[in-house]
Image: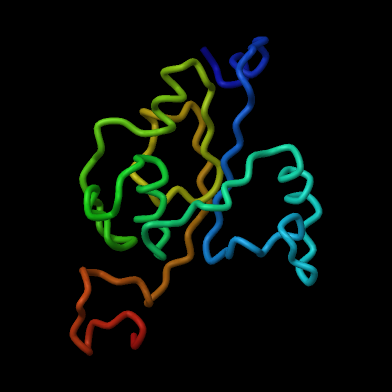
Length: 150
């Protein structure tokens, strides 16, 4: 079944769009009280979506945080501690469970997690800009290997 064909089929299942951003505080949207930042399109999505005011991330780093979001596990369980730590593959995850329930899943944008072709029918990744500030090993680092000083 093609991705496009799946979308054309009528379904009683609700559409799910999961958007997650890096370095984005809970109050960075106009819909949740921010008067300075203009986010009209996200505000429209928020008006008809679900807001989780008590949610929090288990890590301030994007890869471990995304692993936790997809797997439902704490960082100490999946063991992805940085953007360059692969961690332990969880037995299942949210995108895989949605696919198994008949959803046509697509991942668009930066992946930075363990999910891939097993979970998604379409993956549209974005090119990554290489940075010298990426850690090549787990912290603590020696002064010479500290990515903030490269």
